[in-house]
Image (cartoon, rainbow, N blue to C red; front, top):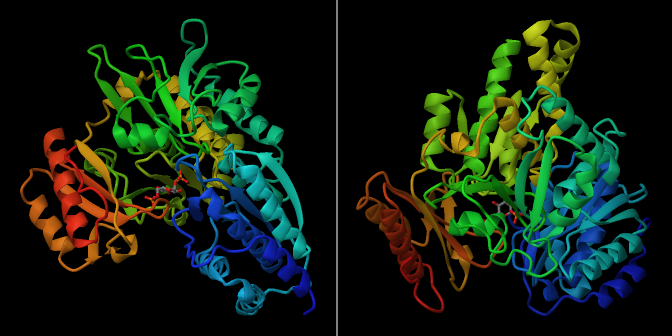
Length: 544
Ligand code: G16
């Protein structure tokens, strides 16, 4: 077949043979499993990226990472032309190709090309990034093998945070309009916007605001280290868990801090100091502090969304252009945050399924779409029309209106509009706190979280659980939702739901209630129901 050297594909595919019987699915954020099982998936995603590139006539990204998962896992996801996650129909192609038996790889490739009307004669260009996992470099080479055997061209960026790769793809496909597709271009764009934005901020003490960052022993340490010299003024960072000793995401990082609601190991914290954690590939961020009485306070993605949307709403009112703003959350959003946004802030709130791809999609419906998962994964999207209006006002209007428009203009540049980005979100948050003169405690006091608990349950096959209503109701197995409803009735201000994870081989349980004791007890009882009704394996879930 013209455009495909079938013999070469067969030969190279055999060098990346699929383990017998292994079935994987393109999940919440691509394929994720133990790194030792992923060689064939990487090779095949190299092939698929070439087809997607030919079809869209654009540069496609391939990121090798398992983000928040343990160090021995790895994963891969494809990045679409405007830096967004791969289109759902291509997720299906990815799953088919990843699971094809060796002798069927060629025919599946041809089938995808036919279904997706790929013109095989076209050129293809793919960019690759990887995180710091020990397995990532070799797996990235398998991706490259897949790209080259299909005649694609590529650029390997090497070590990058996931959002940096999304940024590169976006820049390349907008001919540099979004920014320069280099690591230097990324740092320059963000640091210039940060400097402009914080120019107006009252200086604190020595002129530096300081922040402690737990880098999860991952790529964030390397990239923040590189970026520090661009942030010559206004922010002083102290990095912890930089990967020289501990293991990636182990007892540290945003996922650990959010899930266990405690500080990471390896970080020295004094009371009232502002601290934050990135996850393994630096696409999530959560903040926290100890109060004077030694109590730990977590400021998660919901409160980040609250801070950002109240700041943006104020600026939008000042420019008075009727641009609409919406906030997108998932079922994990704390009930208090949704109430605060709707009742106090008076902004419309929407709930989607877990996975930033769903939130991103919904956020695109607004002039200003704020989306954050409670776990700290999110960003803000500005429609092209809103961006143009703001730019025009920043040039042509006067006084306060002009000042507000200029701030919005810089905020647009500071957010990574391709994907949730811990570095960019951190700079936005630090800028807002500085401009508003807010302490971490004042930010925290926007509302009080309902006590909540998240647990994981191991079952034989997590796909026996299916859900509806943005994952808030279980449809199967029979009886599970009734059991949850009956348990929820026992507690005040309570809510609970379960869903299969799309990144780990577990079922996630979430519960909230009027006290921590009740939230813990409800989460435990729901875990037992999952264990009994959805085929739990191993030890029965223990009380929290
Ligand atoms: C990924 C996704 C997030 C999602 C998280 C957990 O995060 O990008 O949107 O919330 O997985 O998903 P699940 O509950 O399905 O396991 P990351 O930071 O690991 O890429």
